[in-house]
Amino acid sequence: MTCQVIAGHLRHGHRMGSDFAKESCAVRSSLPGALLFVLLAMGRPAPAAPLPSSPVEMDRLDHVLLWGRSIEEVTSVMTARLGFQVVPGRNPDGVANRYVRLADGSYIELLGITRPGAAMDPGMLADQASLRGGAGSRTFGLRTPTLDARRRQLLAAGFAPTDVFSASAKDPDGDGPAYPPRWRLFAFQRDPLSSHLFFIDYAALRATPAREADLRAARLHPNGAQAVTAFWLLSADAEANRKRLERMGFGGATPVRFPQVAARGYCIPVDGKRLLALQPDGAGIAADALRNGGPQVLGIDVAVADLELARRRVARGYEADVAANDGLFGPAFLAPSREDLGMLVEFHASQATGQATACPATGH
Image 1 (spheres, rainbow, N blue to C red):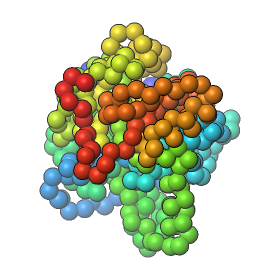
Image 2: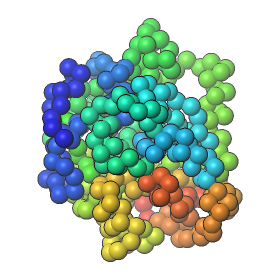
Image 3: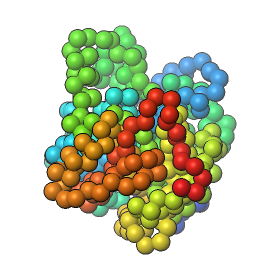
């Protein structure tokens, strides 16, 4: 894709780092598709906040953006086959979103085109070109309550974050122009990783009985899901992702092998959860996914209250046997969701308070 001028706020091209130059086109949009769509439609540069200390220590996994072949298909797979509850979002200009919200605040954002001629920004078009009309994820977000400080830290470390943008004062899901914007975020002019990354924070909205009831209901899932606990970043060079994450402040990487998908790489702890930087380890799922789709968010981990209940629920949804296995983080099973979603979902048992370990022992 050629360089773009984004709504008068961004004036740059999006060039992948040399570590990933062979894995994708040399120049792409500077913001992930759905993220940029929101910025163009609703966003504005946001004011800075005072500099706190150690912002990296406050980062945590927030959500992935998952495109479906249609919004109805991806919703059906998430509900009928995987046992999640999906709640409504919005449908601006022909691209709809919906949500799978978990009890710890993490979530999965579902996206789908709802009509021909949908208004899509360059980032969305790049996502769709990569997906070729299929399903999958190319973008993930980390949440930080020290957004401005985190941006300055990354800038000082040699990265190229965008301006901070915020939700519009007319955001239908916010509290109105007299209150702080519902969300603030920044992305990157040049992707530091193999998949698109952005940092985001949210305002505390006014607590109303309706909002509290909606939130409680949204977090109740038939499969017992409680939290998204890992994002799997697949590329041809896991070491390059590891090094760049370390420059961002995410150290402590542990080498791992993931035989269920024929991948190897690193587990990087993030506030008790983890990012997996993976590459293919011989023939298998990871090699097929990389060859057919390029760098991507290959999968996620989801903690559930009752692993056997979740396994039975998914097995019934797919009308197939779903075997339990010894996953990277203990007893688990891998849902056969790649063909449906373009992304794998591994379910594992929630660990007791005080017993959670972000990454397994070296060489698992």
